[in-house]
Length: 76
Image 1 (cartoon, helix red, strand yellow):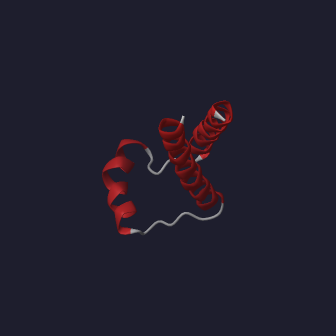
Image 2: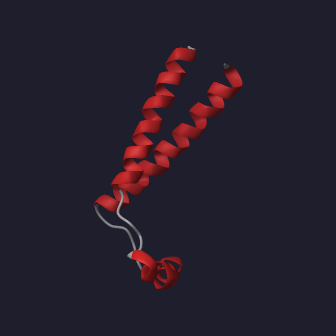
């Protein structure tokens, strides 16, 4: 059982890394960090298409990662 959870945790970890790296950046350099942050907080930009799908996959993998980590730490 411990080996199965460890293997699933490794697969989810790698998947989470890949999905995060595939996402596009939210700002363009230093000017985007200063001026673009307010736009993102106000909700003027909305992710569409592949970015929205990658966001949903990231959330799902992050939740699965947390559950598997708690499972591995508590039950094993």
